[in-house]
Image (cartoon, helix red, strand yellow):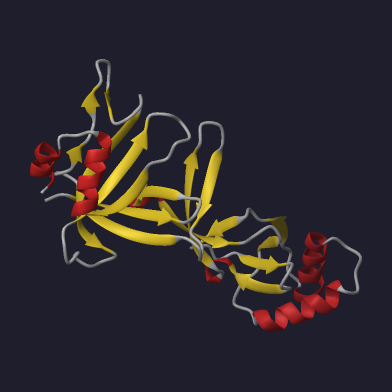
Length: 225
């Protein structure tokens, strides 16, 4: 049996069915962080934060310039500074200064979050897994899915043109084997900007879904079970 792992992220606004390989772990740097290159990070960062805070209050330089001056004058080190992107590298050893908290830290030791990036047809979008989003890890039998598409005279579709559905048997849900038959309904589209959606279903919910689609329930259930 060949398997595939999905991540399903669901809240009141999102439903994203994601190939697990497309989920990234990154460091949340935010809008007010500066990266400092050229300095050893094996320093007492708590003490360094206190010393820079005292130094910065006495200068009218911009923070990036003040950081370069501080390391030059206090540590005798020439560094280069730049504002960071919103997300950082979870494996990077760069020194980061958080302007809001007034603290230094090593990038990889920052707050790690999981994100999903996708092209919506016009722009790259990023979805961040947060505390209001439910995250399911779903292992399915990727060989034995049941395609719900039927021929409409022009294309194989489920519902309107360009839209498709299939059902997988769930092997594991969040690392555990389901106590009763459980299924993943995958909905996806050929239209740019419409990301795949997923729905976890019991056997009775699958039956109801097939009825709603107008499918031959007995025929499809033979293949699904």
